[in-house]
Amino acid sequence: MKDPLLITKEEILKFYKPVNPHTHKGLQGHAVIIAGSYGKIGAAVLASKSCLKSGCGLVTTYTPKCGYQILQISIPEVMVVTDENANFITNIHLPIQPQAIAIGPGIGKELGTQKAVFEFLRVNKTPLVLDADALNILAENQSWLELVPDNTILTPHPKELERLIGKWNSESEKFQKTIAFSEKYKVIIVMKGAPTYIINKNQIYENTTGNAALATAGSGDTLTGIITSFLAQGYEPKYAVKLGVFLHGLTADIALPQTGYQSFIASDIIENLGKAFLSLDH
Ligand SMILES: NC(=O)C1=CN([C@@H]2O[C@H](COP(=O)(O)OP(=O)(O)OC[C@H]3O[C@@H](n4cnc5c(N)ncnc54)[C@H](OP(=O)(O)O)[C@@H]3O)[C@@H](O)[C@H]2O)[C@@H](O)CC1
Ligand SMILES: Nc1ncnc2c1ncn2[C@@H]1O[C@H](COP(=O)(O)OP(=O)(O)O)[C@@H](O)[C@H]1O
Ligand SMILES: [Mg+2]
Image 1 (cartoon, rainbow, N blue to C red):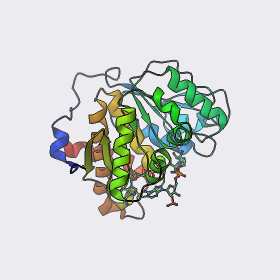
Image 2: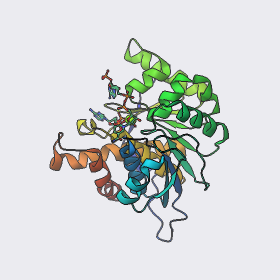
Image 3: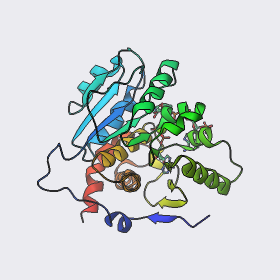
């Protein structure tokens, strides 16, 4: 295994694009977040808000009917399209053509949702981020991975990774299996953890930001929103993923002196995105 390349501010600044003063929301990208089910609409809220707060021009969230008011009231800037089902997603129909789509946070594994994910993957050609239950559904239906576009970004935590690639007996076996999976399906894998690694075929990158404050519910959901935002803004997947992982971790490093480890919650990631961006501009 090659030594990982470090994701540092210096590396990020090689491809980071400051916002063009003449841009408008139509140029800043339109992202769709497919997320949520009864009791887990918070995952949709966190992913959608972090997507908007990372510079995406327009965000549409696709969620079951029970998420409609929650989303409209908690984030008025986000547009909402609802599924025909009240409590979970059963049939994904998007009335728009976005530049990037994320699917998975909080969607659950109901049979109807599994079928909707299959139908979606069968027709979708848009750059994609797969997280949480979308990964769990794919782990149980591995042949569907053939439907995933090249350079799709997968963001498993260790348990989700294990469901996808099987158990490992050592760290080096974990990397070997993840590299093999990335090569087989031509996907980019964010191996979330402390630290987070990015596996892009046989390239390995190690993130240098973040701390244990991120060990809190919904912090992965916000990472999904952030990466999807950069994909929608036109960053190539290999750059969207590095910028997303780096800034996500940086929010926790910035917040730590104020929040300590214990009182930091996923909403603090979103709250500190502004300072994280500003630190790239200086
Ligand atoms: N507010 C909302 O709406 C929220 C909604 N959410 C949504 O809920 C859904 C279920 O997601 P989930 O990740 O909680 O459940 P699941 O996939 O069974 O994994 C849990 C198991 O994995 C392991 N594990 C995890 N991390 C690990 C690590 N770093 N290192 C090592 N092990 C680790 C750990 O296993 P253990 O150590 O306990 O054996 C743990 O028990 C999903 O759709 C998500 O988006 C959540 O985002 C929360 C906020
Ligand atoms: N101890 C830690 N140090 C650094 N980052 C961490 C730590 N614990 C968790 N994280 C980060 O927090 C996020 C957790 O993601 P995930 O488990 O999917 O959360 P959720 O599903 O609740 O949103 C990942 O980005 C992971 O790297
Ligand atoms: Mg998660």
